[in-house]
Length: 518
Image 1: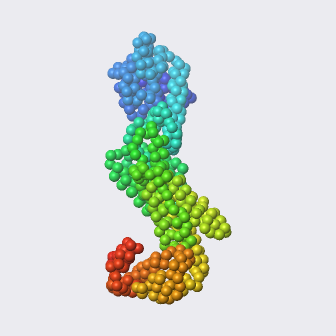
Image 2 (image 1 turned 120 degrees about the vertical axis):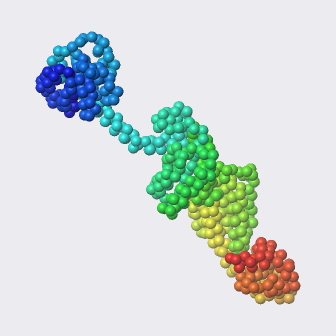
Image 3 (image 1 turned 180 degrees about the horizontal axis):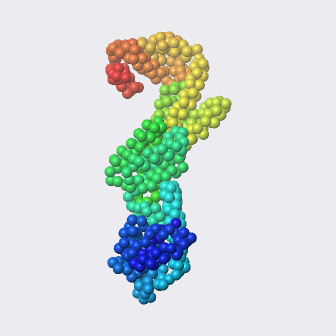
């Protein structure tokens, strides 16, 4: 029911209209009457009717003045004006305030009812329109975050023309013309669910104080950030996000940050972020990577890298695991230093891996070939190194055991002599050949090299250094000259110190100090 107020200074007219017109039949409720504009405005302020039927000519405040005053405060109230004058000026003034119904006195109840009915229909249409618009606004508000996410996905994965951004600029009322923006890309490490992606996005939205848009793209979470001169503050906020997320889920994440750029080049910035993120392959998972981290200041080209895979394979066949492990570290560290294209780096690792497994028998080789996909899918060079080392250790010890079983009786005898006389400063190839085995020293040296893969003198040195390390770790108070005497350098402790440092990087005294601190 719409509320109606009657205003006329003639009581007989207001009483007559009140009784003659069937208000309820036209969907209205007569809420009251007033004798002039001043009294009517007071009632309007208190009860706010929907429709006011008012005479124009009244004392105090006439009908046109009432329309003007009400329109300034309650513009939605509709008026029907009555007058005994047919002058056009009255109608023109009334229409200026949106009054469409201007009835001349005397008018019957039917013309009034028709006018009221028409206004009721207008009010109903307006209410329906407002309800629809409000419903659309609520719906739009609920889908707006998703629409913004979709927009960001589209502008980073496609080349957009300026007119497209202008459209979104108006649609979402966002500043998409700023020249100072960065992209921040989050990648969760390990196996994760969409719940975790949603969580880190939610955490970041609360911590970032200057983000424009955010969305998920594939398995990453992307933020468009207003660039700030204080990059330290941005890094601090990211560290806070990482820490908060880890507290809840015990999961780490890697973050890529682009240089500043214009949002019109969002596609380029996104590719830069992906390039940064890909370089966690070299820089390990869980860090913050910028474009400076992935630059190549040394200008190395693919052809600059060379590694002697034949030498590496010989070490594997010799069964010397420590030497093989050292070579793998050298190989991987060189690749990390160069930071070549990731696919190129992986191809070098695969190349050396293939060379190594080809040393095996067919059955073993096929087993390792089946594991190539595991190696290829690894996301960091450190994980590739760990996998490579595990396979290399298996193959190296396979050859070690084969070599151990193949050693001739003569070489086994040499091993026994070395073990027994390791502290003898006269221990040498010639001494063993001439004094212990009574055979040609050159022949013994070649036989030893063939069966062990290394020279006799190198083997003796390694055994003595290993024994020295063992003695240092067992006897913390042992003196350098005592060590030299026990392992065959009795008359020259200074030379022993030089040999020890060459193999370990420390003098015996330094090694002993490190051992005590460890």
